[in-house]
Length: 207
Length: 207
Length: 207
Image 1 (cartoon, each protein chain N blue to C red):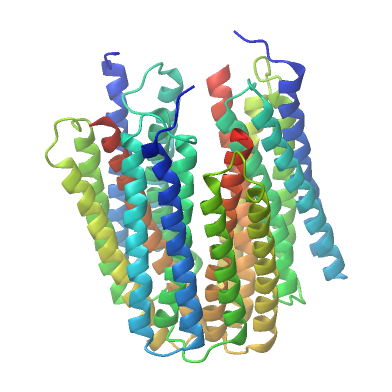
Image 2: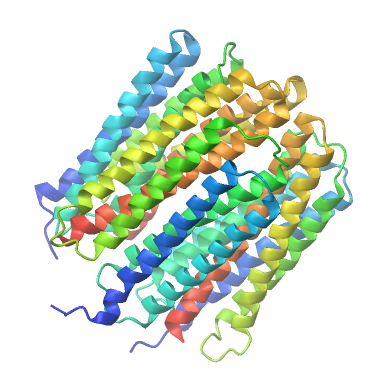
């Protein structure tokens, strides 16, 4: 058996720092749709978080290439980093759509969706904080299940939002815009669930 | 060389059971679009199959984590399970769209598409049944090629359905609805082909 | 240490040949949107390149299964081949959309996009040509960064094209058509960037 050194433990901290960017951009989204003004400036803040997240993922990859041994499987480190990055990408893409589509009036269910994403990325951050203790953690699996539960809430929100949209909105161009915004929000939650599922697999292999 | 024990052979049975869910939901789709009534109740049947399929995939992952040796590469087992699950997810998502979009009248090519998906998932089930005998099978490669052939038929159906839609339908909201339904159906066949391609790679490595 | 034999070096040539198909279909796209006539016949040329690219990827997979040792990690060979193939698939899908959507008038930014794809696939081909010399190359990393730079240019083009489309086009069916064409073009550049990122990872591991 190898001892896993402090340097290898660094991966857990890098995951936490990456997950913090996901949580941060989710909070920016709640602000965007709540105080819907100065959109182009606000979108710059999402881009900024996305660039920092990219740099963090690059740091994880560089660390991975330098590390002879790793605390969990290399391919899982790679996947966790990439899918955490996907979350931030999806949120940034959602933000861009408000500009590209020249959205001027907000739909009320968008805030519910954004709050659900804050909740889900927050719980995923808790998963990442707890991952380091996976061998003795009593709460890690509960937190993973919680991410899955919130994703299911998001699925129901998505179906409700789409059903309402197709029932109420008669302007086809408005339908195109909101359908895509809701889809990006749903994909964001899917990416959160993907990370939770990969971590669940890691726990199954290591405990 | 290791002997592969009965427990490891279990993976082949689990693949067959997962592929049966894909075939089952394809048949539900033919029924949905043929006898287009009681939609919300019928959609529950898709959700039920999807949940059972998820549980089966979870069983495969648990078996994988318990198994010291596996009859085929671990990453191939992982991939086959996930992409079989994708097929069932795509079909369930298609079914949900009939509700979300409040579809009231059926287009005739949807039944052709649904029948093609029944044919393709049926042949994929045959691939999974035959996989266990890959070392001496005379028919496995033929069945894989048949899945690819049916996917090509689906591609042609998709292009024809889309061409007809954009030529004939002047109501943009109807175009949005049917375009997405056809795309889900095409993605279902893509997922079938993906599984067949992964299995082909497994055969190339093992025969 | 193993010596990598001429047979194993063959992978680099196969990558170059695959990347040439990507570059070739990008050039077909510039011709299609510049001389917009005889569309069905021109689309056949994209299909022809796509089939040849598929055959090349199949050759890479067969070579991989026959090779006991490989010059770079097996999973990286697999991934590079598949994502190069994606580029050609995305370009073929773009071409099909001009037929399926019965596009009769061209938008000017489509040519800018197509030229950017020619530039990006051309630079990616240079990356593939240089990959063989990764251990002593002074230019490989610069070429990879150049692919990333061009992809960023494409992102800006995409946002501009979409913003203009949603501001100017009042016919919802036209919005549906062009939104999807732009998305395929952006995905083509994403696939180029994906290949460049995988190659960057390979270089980090091997130099």
